[in-house]
Image (tube, rainbow, N blue to C red):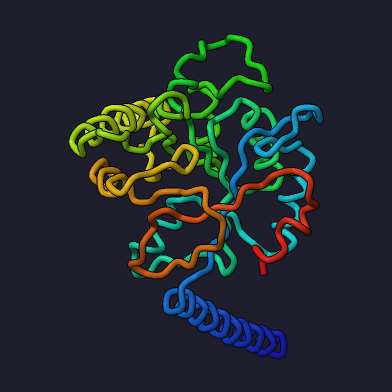
Length: 284
């Protein structure tokens, strides 16, 4: 029994040493994370459809999306949400994974619920879905939804949000259009700054209230439709309460403590390339 007690004491001592080493290493990693900043690739998806005839610049098949998710996992990347990114920038002690990545889906298509959400559950990955409020608002509870053209219902968005795997963000209530004079959320020619401010406050602000009411959390991030913006856009969106904005310009972001989350770069995932070919150069 005496020998057993000695062995137990030795094992406990070794355990404390290992724990201390891991704690120190983790602390050093966190300090490096904070001091040096972190690279953040953002991938931009839209519609996910099985029909090959409908594949296009903004339409990807579910099996290709699944291959992308597998590639991301193999490369050692961890999908995060905008709340994690905002916390990292704003809070002194907040850290991100060593290799963070943001997976985004624009427009809020029903096929995101039908195909994307099950894949997020399967691989325990997280993503952001930026919705167009009017498209969701017209979905009646229980009505038939086609993956080809329908959008998510409020009930489906809440279900995904409640899972902790999906974050719902703002893509305007009814400015997702290039028809007529207005180009997405861009200021029109001849429009005064005050008129433009009232437009964004009315449209984008209305969707803020709707998402807060229907989903349970107000968006922190604004996603520009078609990437269209104006010189005054960022200031007005900040007044509304947004902490970050997403562009459609490609590249990899570098996040730093107290840095800007304005016009974050995103890389559109079009079909025609393997996961390896698409992510080459984006992921290390």
